[in-house]
Image (cartoon, rainbow, N blue to C red; front, side, top):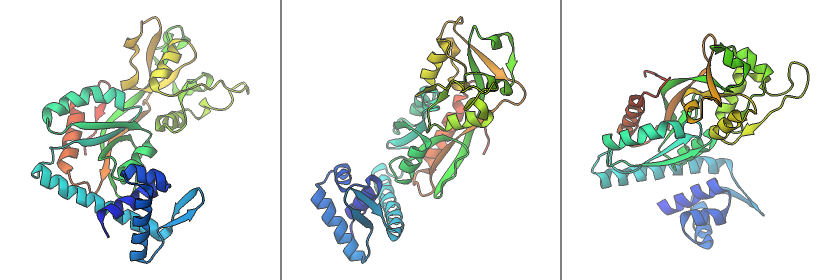
Length: 308
């Protein structure tokens, strides 16, 4: 049994395809296939069910591959310790962030972190929560920034800050005459939403379940979706509807005041808690702690840091 064989089975489990797994591991498909079969013979079990055009992991294979991932991670930790002289703040940190956080946090975070840990550059990836979670568990990322609730076996989470939601409206909208807006009023509006897969979309629908479906008059509601918060901002500016945004993403100052306005919600504003998540076995806890401290030191406008 070798580390390369363990890498191969983890890659096959991730890709569900021998060819793509071989490409990801930078070896030929025959080389990978032979190594996987050799490991199965050595263990005396079938790790994968092979059908034409389809690869699936057997139940016992799931357990073996999970352990293989942990072994690879420990081996990587040994290399990091040896190469960095036990300096946990040396070497790249692979950071993932969901789409509704990255563009608004990273411009503040990266220069601060570069000053605090000049030998720890960030390798950044933006994606959906579900994708980042899988890449974190597979060892492709070291730490991710997500929105709570988030619970996954084998992972730790640590809250960073609470961020209220705000309402973004065209400046010609009647809501412009109010200082604050009741959340209940959204059910009568055309609310622009992110597409499926974004956790922020789900959070908006939690506070406004009637923002999909039919209007109060029984007519089908006009539902428009954007691929990013920036796209939705432009759609609101053009007068297509209103939207709910995390306060750090509101950014009405990016347009002329005649196009957009921001309004707070009445009463206790809906909000989200942004957090870090990482594997319990990740060998660089000092890097995680520094990342948390640096993010909280950014003190993004309208957010409130959360204590441990």
